[in-house]
Length: 193
Image (cartoon, rainbow, N blue to C red; front, side, top):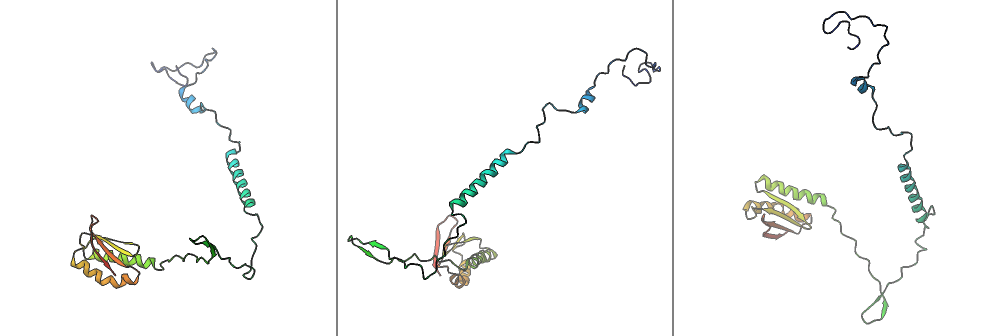
């Protein structure tokens, strides 16, 4: 019978006080074992230094120092004045006859960058919205200097009238042509602006 009961659980008679006999050793209960805590796996030592991070940091520092030394270090690039630069030597180009004659080779032209990409995309978007407002559903996009319209209504007079209304605006933005394609990809018409 467990300790602490003041009465007998069967007859409810008061329990006698502890006798003079030596007490039995108390067994540990399951609850006491669970509450006591502890794990089966030993906890790792948390006092160690993270060597992996130190190795990565050291490798990065070595790479930075190597790059600095290879690129010339702190030596500044020599400055040259326009009067000190030698004249560009004419490049030698061999013609088909086999004689080498010095000729000037022109540098390639600078690429032409359209200064109005936003205006062009806004005009294409506005055309698509105008066609949608008239329920002429179409996908309007630009491909280089061409406006491409994909619609099932390419032969509709309202679409042609809307294109005529915006033709001058599209031409001023640098578009050269308008292509109208069916949804299958077949070309219905090509118009230059």
